[in-house]
Amino acid sequence: MENKKRSLWERLTGSVSMEEEEESENLKRGSAGSHKGDKKERKNNSNWIEEENEEAELAVDVYQTPTDIIVQTFVAGVKPEDLELSIARDIITIIGKREENRNIDEGNYFNKELYWGKFSRTISLPKEVEPEEVEATEKHGLLTIRLQKVDKEKTNNVKVRSI
Image (cartoon, rainbow, N blue to C red):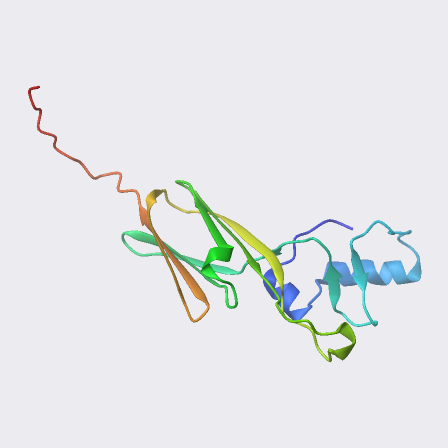
């Protein structure tokens, strides 16, 4: 089975792609061989898949204004100190961790669909940005990152001084 990174939506909802579903059916029929080394396992014959030591991928919106590139993503339940933004001229990486601070016995759950753990997303930006000119804000779980575009037509006149 291909080691594909699952989106945060797939992790949150427990959804399974058609390809994974077909591979699972093949495994049940025994036509695909043994996959004892796989990190994925079925739980209670449901579609919920538990994946160990894997990061979820954030869903993002990326759009532009005349002067900025805007990146938005939901990070509800994540403390600002648990978020890391890495910005280059043409790439932004968002890394974080949503920690579960509840001690509930697994047997007491009826549904367990919320995602807890590490997540990340690297986005290639459509235009170059100024890595030093960034504003990141969070309101009601929505992280908004405003990246100032590089103005390639901007000029600057410099006065020469005598020393």
